[in-house]
Image (cartoon, rainbow, N blue to C red; front, side):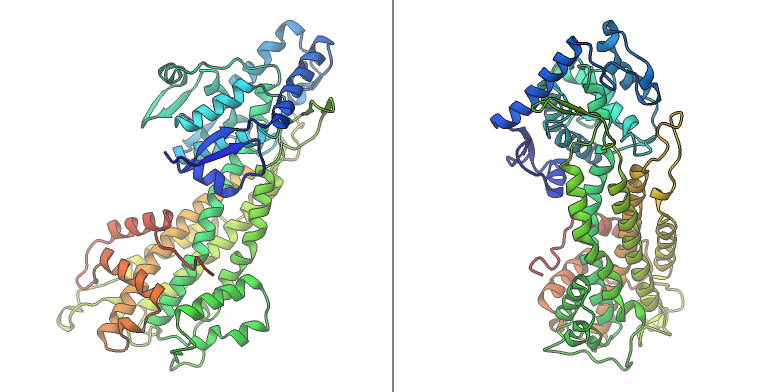
Length: 515
């Protein structure tokens, strides 16, 4: 584990902070700042005082949701939060993986450390301990409508903290209580507000959005580099990315994409002039497609980070000012909108790359490359099929990605006796976005290998030399050339595709780091 520390309760956290913790590149710590300590201590003391005065506090001395009209006898108040964790233990579907689970822990800790949730130190410290010891609650992916927050999935975090659920630890699924005993950690006893505080918020969807953002940002750059390689392989017209041309349509992200491709193609030093005046849209309009995502990324980033650095449960406890504020900060509308928008922009990258791949394999459009990019000998070309099936697969992945772009946020359902009568569906949108990212990574991996094969064929045909490639393009070409030998005789490509997808997901290639 890294020696880098991310301090909770002391300044704004970033998407990168959450991702670094999720990837075990950083360790969590809790602020010792006196002002932060005062926030936590004053909220706890304020709640204790209200209980002694028999104050009415939603979810503390009342039932939850539609049951708000039910007054809880004071002798049962301490049991109420435990019941909340138990009756929400009905999630279904696959479990979030360990990286996702760890991001969820970090995101919930970030919200509670705003100091407006009325939680005590043991809960904050145990969340920190779970993060740092890689004790990851098993959390089902399905069952949240995104308001009142991620109640059901987060109940599995709460249940693990009290020692009643399963966790993933050292590659095994084990009982939370057993793992805590192994580590010398005590299960916590939930205080009156703490069950609601940990569960009634947007931590799951926000955690997933942090992970999704990092992947989307990388794919924007990868799709740009693939476009450059495809243009080289197709002998495209580099004038399509001219600086003057893009100065008259001033979307900054689009201009940046065009500038990156222009640099990759070495347009100034070695302008590539195609026999065609105009390339097909999948090459010529690539900056306009990728640019939509590139221009959206700053909005995605600021919105996700605002949610990450918010107190998003209910009620809000202002211990210093002694207010209990009932509202709807658990509503995940902002994350839902970001994820619905992101998955659409990302799916368009899949569609773009799929069309580029279709041009590369088709002798009607690939400007003299062999059918399906097969590098077989003349005598054996009749039985070799190159990238034919890879292109079929890419088409399938693209279709599925496009199908998933239906916005989840418009599918609000009235739930919980019509108390939750308008909900965000933010967690479903986030899960959809992750699936679209996976499918798009599969398409980009397919097109990347095909583009490299196309460039190799141009070199073999003496229409291009390796030295013609810009240094950064050449370095990536060489790396993939080592990973993926020239496809001369048909062979199964699943393993190299999976290896390429893994390289994409670990962001193996540094792309336009200075641009």
